[in-house]
Each structure stands twice: as structure tokens, then as C-alpha cells.
Length: 201
Image (cartoon, rainbow, N blue to C red; front, side, top):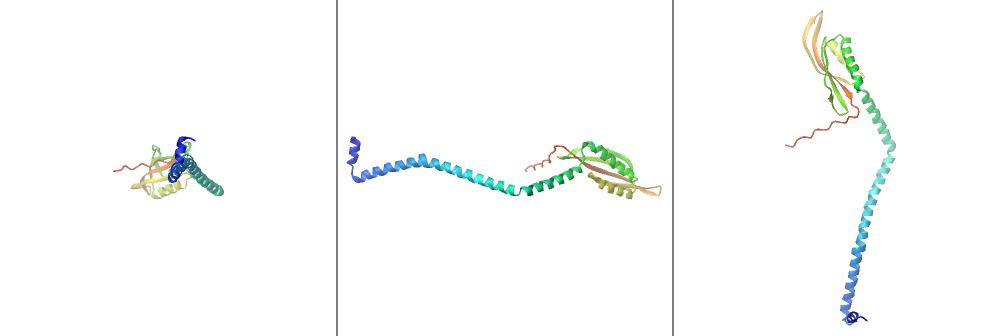
């Protein structure tokens, strides 16, 4: 027998018990540090993955259960968008639309003294197309012109309407009329305008 081991066997009982307990503690500590903690980390990671995947599965099931509803809402929104876009002319249609505005003014008895298309103002997926108008006619003729413009298939707004300088001519009370007719053109591939960030004071 090795002298060291023989010496240990000669120790008092309590010392041998303490040594044995120390060895057991060291073995347990090694097991906990090198085996248990590593396995516990793996277990925690797997549990987290499991929870994430379960949440994903539940979300996918919820979407799948509501898929007919989502499809119906999508189709409804697509139809609304198509109807809205139908009211926005494309670039090729703008000259025809502007001509029809001038024609409506003449058809309602108004004299067109100025018809000046302005510079387009892009607003994301559409652009504003302003036209400056100067007309001469009666109040009734102006009202009928504005009414007919509002009934066009395309969107046209009449803004900044000014009636001035009434004059009697040939039994008619004629007014000098200035206004801004604004239509809107669809921009292919455009996006919604970004909101400007307010500067902090």
C-alpha cells in the first residue's frame, strides 16, 4: 500500500470523514460546473426557441384561420384603390383633361382670357397640376361651370375664386373671374411624401 494512503488510514475517523466529504464536494462541484451548468444553458436556449416557435405557430394559425377574411379585405381595398386611381389621370391624359376644362368654360358662355397651366407639384404617388384661369361671364355662368367641373370623371378642384369688376354689357352683368383649377396626376412608382421632422428648439 502507498505510504500516503496508509498514513490517511491512520488518521482519526473525523479527519477521514472530512477528507471524504471534501472529495465528494469537489466531484459534485466539478459535475455541476462542467456538466450540469452547460446542459442547463442548452436547456434554457432550447426552451426559448420552443416558446418562440410556439408563438410563431400560434400566429401562423391565427393568420390561416383568418385568411379568407384577410383576402376579402385585401380585395375590397384593391377595388377602392383602383377606383381612386381611376380618378387620377396619367401623364398622357392631362392635356385632354385641361382642354375639357377650357371647353366647359366656353360651353357655359364664359370668355376664356387666360388659360395657363402651372408647374406640377409632386406629392408622393401623385402630382398636383394647377391651371390659372381668367374668365369673363355672369355669376350664373360661373356657377354652372364650377358645377360641370365637379361632375367630371377626373378630380378637379376650383380654388382661389375671385369675382370682380362687374360691368353691364348687352343687358348682361359680366364679372371678371380669376381662379385656380387643380387636377391631380398619378405618378407611377411614387411613394407617400415623408413628413418633415420638427426641429427641436
